[in-house]
Length: 204
Ligand SMILES: [Zn+2]
Image (cartoon, rainbow, N blue to C red; front, side, top):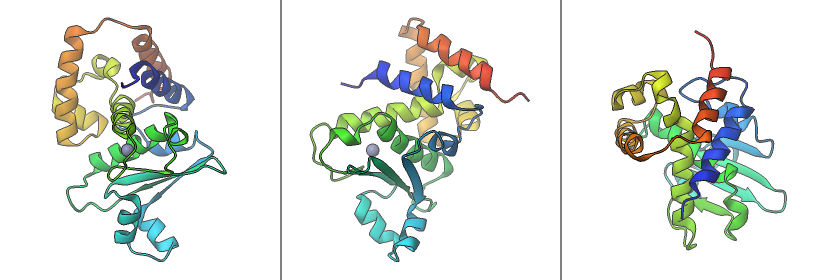
């Protein structure tokens, strides 16, 4: 079961912790809120460890990103691939970083015995749910539906332009939004998201 209220509240707390909010979201501003979390690109990690990027992909069991958790010291290391090959466009790299931050902020890693939570090859039964939760965190963080009206979002291409998602993710997010507007009832969370954004948005 995906814990939607928990995820939504964690995104709200992240927004509250930011000095200012502008889109596309800067993931480094969020990392700055997490003193026990560092992020390196695969390329930086390979150079530090004198190995190849291919070795890092194998270590992470993912071409896009992974998060390592050091249980003894309660420290996180996010690794993400900055290589644009294989259609790893800006929007996809942004999504990967937000997804990995989701694993950290939603505290998935201390819950599992395996210290590496990668996209592939992870056998824990709860992993598919954690993956879905990290994706939901990324979607809400990068592209929050309560702000669509304020930001004049009226199409998938608006999502791509304003929030910096990939074409595929923008189209998917738009179809979710259409369903959301049809069935949802207003919540306190939506009002809080709007309020915090209006307080912290960078004036043009
Ligand atoms: Zn993941």
